[in-house]
Image (cartoon, rainbow, N blue to C red; front, side):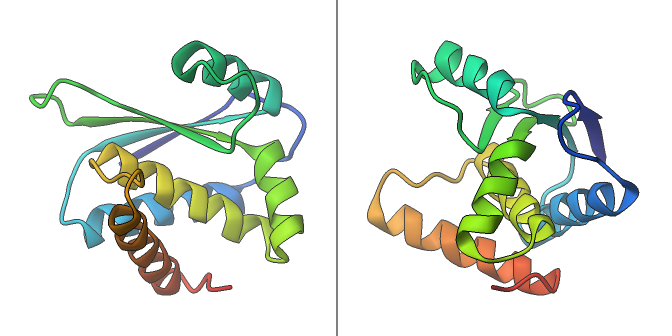
Length: 142
């Protein structure tokens, strides 16, 4: 299950965007053979910069942050925070659609909730392969 909360007013959040996010979460959980609730917060650059400063000591906006829930007893996997402003900038920079970028950030964030990371080269390669496979299932390839 996916809970989506829009906490920004700069970019329109329509039903199409919500559907892309929901499908990205479900496809990631299916690929990883996991179940649970993922909360998605849609924010602007100022909001995510504040979180990034508070939790990672990096005083700059980022595209996505993940906050896994520590309690294994709960069905809630955690929170994914996505800057729609940053997603829009990156979609333009990378030459693909806004929906594709938001889907990528959603998949990336959910994989973090499930314990994947990209600190080491092999972890990065594995995570990128998973992301691209899930985006292909969604029909959102580059």
